[in-house]
Length: 164
Image (cartoon, rainbow, N blue to C red):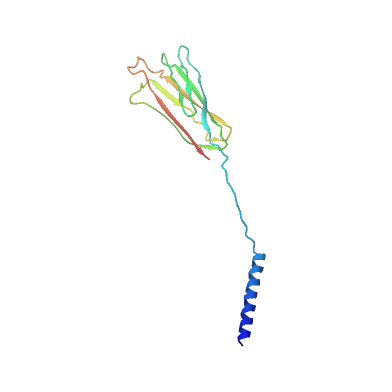
């Protein structure tokens, strides 16, 4: 009987060993490796500013710009004079952009009421590679009948594009 138990134990050990070998033969470990890279580029910027429609005798100064700012200094002489500045914005990146904000405010409290600012709105959507323009026009109010005490007025504009 004892031999029989030993034989059964040996047979079970052999069977378990064969099963383990068979399992390892039919089991495969798969490895998956991957990398991700962002190749898109965000690059919405100002690429130019140009004075246009400058009234005779007025000075548009030397407009300046960087990728994110535009600056001008207009000098108007008499009521009805005006100067327009065309600011060019380009999406030089590879990601489409959507206009989030376009807001221009002038210093009404400390600035001259004789100076009127107006502006156009840029494109709502700026696809990769496209450009748009914003025109800011400064006008010496033609209804003014006497020289104002305050002769300056500043304007601040914010144009913000976001990823589409």
